[in-house]
Image (cartoon, rainbow, N blue to C red; front, side, top):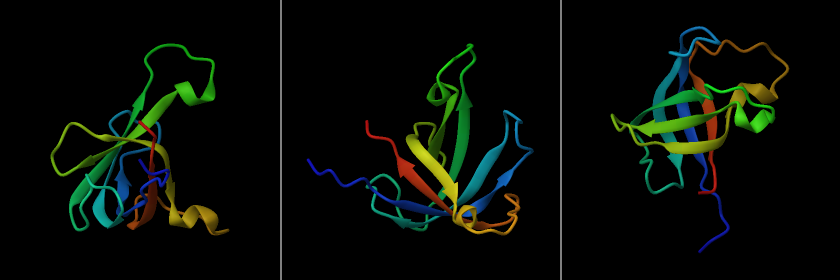
Length: 105
């Protein structure tokens, strides 16, 4: 077993307003070291929020990457925009590169 965490880069944009439970990221896999996310395939990312009151920041919810039309997804430890490292304002409704880091399962 390797300690290498697969890297995944997606190109796409969010649809819906922040805070909307139906908000979804739609895109395409442009780079992947993960065996379940082939390059060129369509994908979507959802945010699954906890329905219960929680106290720990990590318990509020999680991002899940779905490849193609699959309901089963890859839980992500982190999902960030390439523009997040820039000092410029970023419109998440415009296509951009996003980095997905799968959680260790």
